Length: 332
Image 1 (cartoon, rainbow, N blue to C red):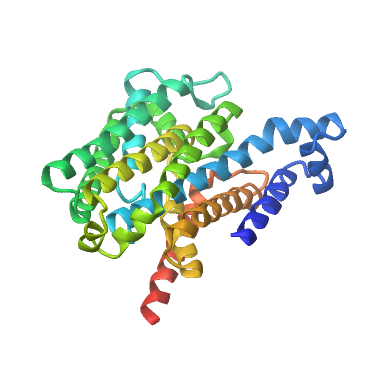
Image 2 (tube, rainbow, N blue to C red):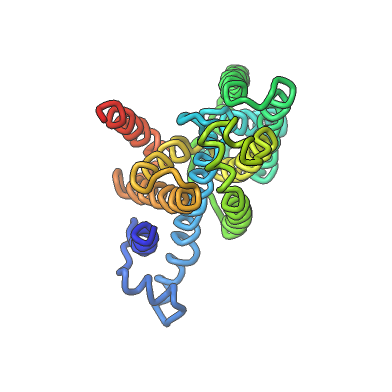
């Protein structure tokens, strides 16, 4: 965990330093410490790169925390916000706002933009919470078993994907471009206010999950064992799912769909430090922040001066990494 923390701090300084206009790391550190630096460096660090880097760090922490909690709650290694349909629900909500609430327009320079990002964010957030509410509601009716939650999430993911495709089919060219623009998970759109909102929600989720880490350890031993130890399994499962969904909904509604971070980061950490949630949860948060920050830095440099959305790189890296984890476990 200490190594992860040091790596995160080092990569944060490097991420702020590199880009279209390179800034020496020493100048970045001086600016972060409040020491005197050239005005241009101060603008680049505080107005452009630091909000983006912090957004990646916070979003990676939140998604990895939610993924680690979901995998434990559901006792399913495929549990994550992306695989349970919450991300697809957010994309559908954003497409709905663009289609019917006039969220996407074309500027005079020919670029497509989202005119009312807060309206689009609110729609994405509402649909994400609706998906989480449906999962929890069906679980209450059918019993909060891992199978019911996973199958409900998969079905909702397919349903919201179909709804998004339907909206895209009937959208005009400007609306379609705005939908696709929002769907790309991109930390560059984050402001200081967005970072503060995500930090508050992620911090609260981290404290909540750490407070229930012993109960998650008991659930990992089996539902019957957990009940014998006094854990109210169904209640812990539903409340944990709701907390993970809330954190995910806030992050995705502000940054767009970012996949595989919440799925891969907990598995990478679990192979190194084990499955004790007292250590797994904070370590997974650090690993998720490190992974998303590294991906965003690479996305800015890979095809410079063109900047890739970070979700493109996480998808390319996440799938092979997860397959390698599966093959490694199979070989052992």
